[in-house]
Length: 304
Image (spheres, rainbow, N blue to C red):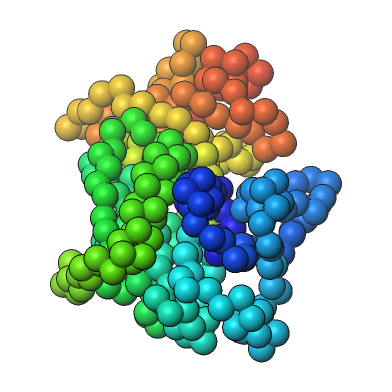
């Protein structure tokens, strides 16, 4: 059961190792893009390519869906980047249901663990497989794998690494379950932290924060949902940044543009940050140099 691109490596590795996949469950097709064309999920595309049985329930708390599960009689359900399952579903298989989560549980429980780990300046994260319970992301741990985070890595880059690392962990977890060698470990409640869903309103840059905090915020939201700022009443997305230097005292008011000579540098409360890749509303994503050729920004103007 999965929908997002993050789930594809896990489905692929189970398929490649010839585990019997009695069905793939994913979200219904949705209209996307400017033309609102109906698009299939990455998981559906994989399932159709490899001729795997496919279910796309509109509701998962539905007797019709429960009936499908009972008819399939799965021995195990593997969940990666899907929805919260009702107890009637996740308790049905003989061996229960397992989930792959993109953090070292119990840290960063919730919908956006990759983003929040980077935003908070973590130097390490990882992936965890665990048995599903009624409370989200609280089940007994099967396996964990650690992954380091560099100071320049974006959420998109980390996502891809964790998806591949997680796929190996899923395979190993299934093999342990199959051979009855799982040693479950309860999560430590005292160190639990949370990674709630990120909305557009959460993505606006606060220029009053430090250079490091702003840099982490930008890379933690890149490429999606993407940090943004406002300039002359319009919105500009920021995909990539670099800390130029830190100082105890600000060189200008926070958010002030201080350099537009082949680069775009902005003062913050303890230094200067360079904006490397930007995008105006309705325009292409550009390097700062190309962006400045099409937008006449002056030193002393401010981002809000």
